[in-house]
Image (cartoon, rainbow, N blue to C red):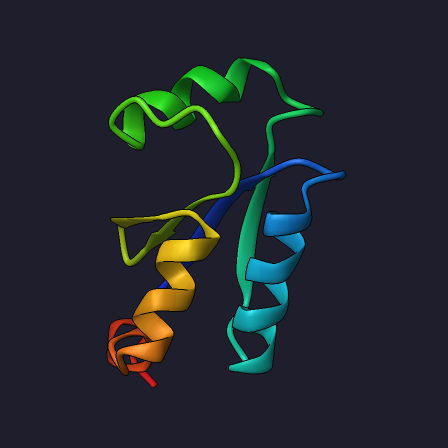
Length: 85
């Protein structure tokens, strides 16, 4: 199974939806809370090619974007293979 990393904040509804989608698939998500670790926000922006909103999701080191992009991958049937399911 691919490693999933998500930059998130406590109050972000899109972060919560992304977490639920991944949890439903049985995937463990490593979360970096940029509201608790503000120094990590610039790391997120750099890794996400300038994206400043949360969530920013990485699967197996590949930047997939936010919740909308994650959900689109799922609808197209591309998320499970990317996750290694």
